[in-house]
Length: 162
Image (cartoon, one colour):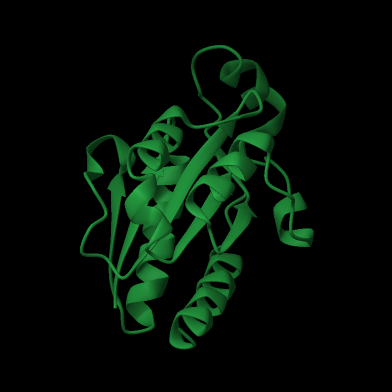
């Protein structure tokens, strides 16, 4: 299967997460590519799609939101999952966090098969407000590669059943 991982990322943490997701699909024998939502183009021709977006100030990344809206018709006809990247702690690993309202609306719009929240990444030298203030106490890499691989394996199992 060919799988597109489209992502919206402001500080490159979600871009790295999208690469982890694509690599996990490749390890399971799929063709997978991670592309910025801003330049990804329509998802026609892919067998499945994952859309990942970072969370900032309680909002899903604008590029992910716009891409989903622009391609909603194709996504409704394609197995699609949405991913949120952002908690700067281990809460994402401790249990499935519910999608924020913007993600829940996007899920409804495209009839997404599921959603997962993964930990985020914030560099200690992050610039801009509020990232620089948050970096003083919350910087770090909370993305968990094993959690990503487990989730991708569950998506793979669902795809195999289609």
